[in-house]
Amino acid sequence: MSEPTVYVSITGLQLKARRHTVRFWWLAIRSMMQARQAKGNISTDARQINRVHHTLTVWTDEAAMRRYLVAGAHLQAMKAFGSIATGKTLGYYAERVPDWSEVHELWRTKGRTVGPPEGRTA
Figure 1: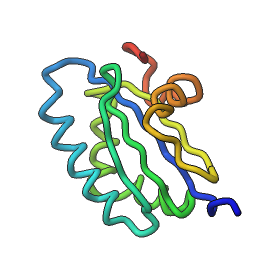
Figure 2: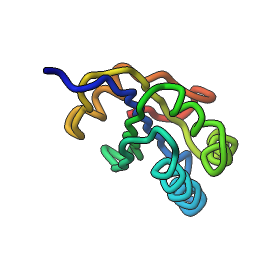
Figure 3: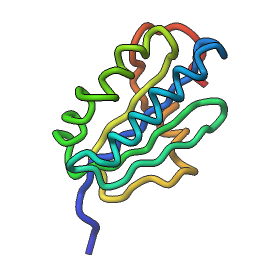
Figure 4: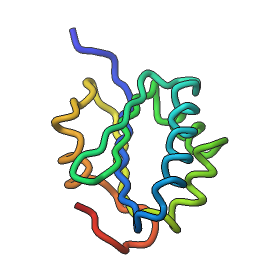
C-alpha cells in the first residue's frame, strides 16, 4: 500500500553578498518557526548544500503551503528576498518525500528561478 500523497516544497537560496548573512538568518529562522506551526505542515527542515541554503517542507496539500507562503514572517522574507538573495523553488505532489541526498539535484535540475535572474544558481 502506498503512502498518502503530500505536497513537497523545496527552496534553495544563495546570498548575494556576505553582508546579508545576519538579515538572512533573522528572516529564515522566523520563517521556519512559522512553517512548523502552520496548519497543514507535516515537516520542516533546512540544510546548506554546496553553499545553497535549502528548505524542505512537506504539506498536506498545496493550498496549505500557499497560505503559509503569503503570511507573517514568510511574507516579510519574500519582500526582502530580491535585495539579499537569488534562488529557485520546486513544489510538487509526491507519494514519498525525497531524502536530503536528492534535494539539491532536484532543485538544481527542476527548480523554477524566483526573482531577478542574477547571481549564481549552483
